[in-house]
Image 1 (cartoon, rainbow, N blue to C red):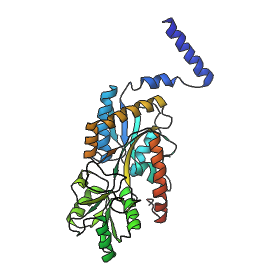
Image 2: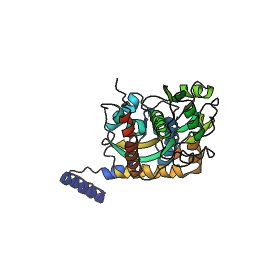
Image 3: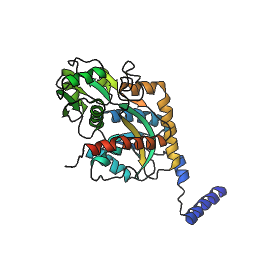
Amino acid sequence: MAWRTRRLFQVLVFALVTGTAPSFSVAQDWPTRPVTIVVPFPAGGLSDVVTRQLAKDLSEKFGQQFVVENRLGGGGGIASASVAKEQPDGYTLLMTAIGPHVLNKMLYKSIPYDPDKEFTPIIMVGDAPQVLIVSPMLPVNSVVELVEYSKKNPGKLTIGHVGPGTMGHLATLLFMAKTGVTGVLVGYRGAAPMMPDLITGRVDFALPAMSPQTLSSKSLAVASSQRMDSMPDIPTMREAGFPGLEATTWQALFGPAGLPEPIVNKLNAAINDYLKLPSSKESLSQVGLRPIGGPPSVINETIAKDKEVWGPLIKQHNLTLDN
């Protein structure tokens, strides 16, 4: 007991002298109680499904419950702002996507959180590429044929997207700019109401994120760097003859700024192990997600690339979500 008392005294003296709390030991013991993972999107969506699969695995690994909580509103801003204000102790985390974490800052004059300063990146879980889907009624079977059809019928195509400022919308604008395809844009409140109209021919084509619905649709290409395991016969945009057309909706895990490195390392290692399992790859593939993983720096690299691609496009089209 004497050595424990002496050790505690040494730690406290070090803390008083340096102003550093003895958080390393606390971080090493983490987690000792349930962990909440906040999701900015509704139950049943891609983010929610992926997070619940991951939470189940983490609960088993760490022997503590990882609870998923959906906090909706503000284009993901409410969830992000709430997590940013939490203590960086590892008990409140954020599973978010490119919209709340990159695009919102470009689309709103102000947002109640700073995605660049108020979060600690943990791991890039995966991404879902946008998929070029056409109506079964449209007489085209490749991207080249779609472009030719548009040239013969200028401005007549109806082009669905899942809402202003979304990746589906931005990917569509990029596709039109790169290919010269013209048409009338039709906005929807998400993919759920758009997909039936696409399948029945009320709109001619769209670029939604990969999902179980897209797997059974008439797909011409995926906007990713490589083919997807769940759609091995569908070419990438580059393979279809149109390089520079990459657009994905990623899912990444963050903590509040200042999250201790030992906690980051524990989570990163555990999730990387999960993403490498064949069973995990299969289950994620079924909902349209391509596992990525790697160190936290992958998140920063991805965000930097996103800003280079989507920032100029948003400015060019003067896109804003302010009322």
